[in-house]
Image (cartoon, rainbow, N blue to C red; front, side, top):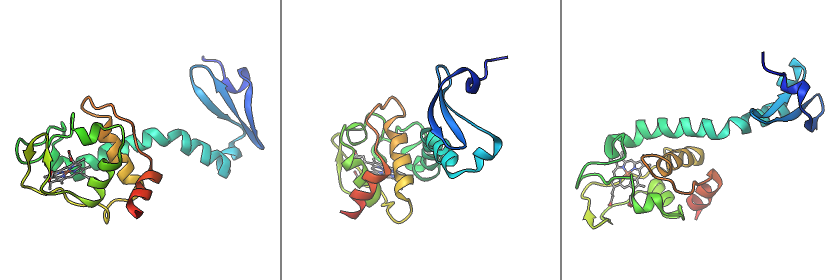
Length: 162
Ligand code: HEC
């Protein structure tokens, strides 16, 4: 049996009915009576904790359903038809602005690594929410060997409204 983190660690934050404990190997643990799980405070914190993982699952899912038909599951695209996103300069750029713009508003007639693609990149602004664009972009920025800074839904919203 592992030690109960709620008994064996100190509370970092008093949340009224319950409390938030920091436990070395488990990170933050929410402690309190069963009713505590029904409170808005509990839900807000546990959702925030689930955030990155939930976003990653959503991103992978959206990529598979909306993007992989052209860019392929392995992010390699199809030579001279659909550009690769693995190692792509827009996808790996530290500044994600261009990445967000292409996904929201589409692109055609561009030159990517010296290749002109005849097919068009569709615009997704009408189909994907800021959160969905965030998730799929971050999937591309962190897959297939890409390791670029990620974007937030707030930044996507700002670029959408520009
Ligand atoms: C119908 C095929 C198709 C689908 C579906 C598609 N793309 Fe594209 N995408 C393209 C083409 C073609 C280009 C290149 C356009 C050009 O250069 O003119 C492109 C370009 C891009 C680029 C820009 C690369 C660069 O270097 O400028 C990104 C990023 C991108 N797509 C992401 C996505 C994401 C994210 C999705 C899913 C939400 C998606 N694409 C779905 C065809 C597609």
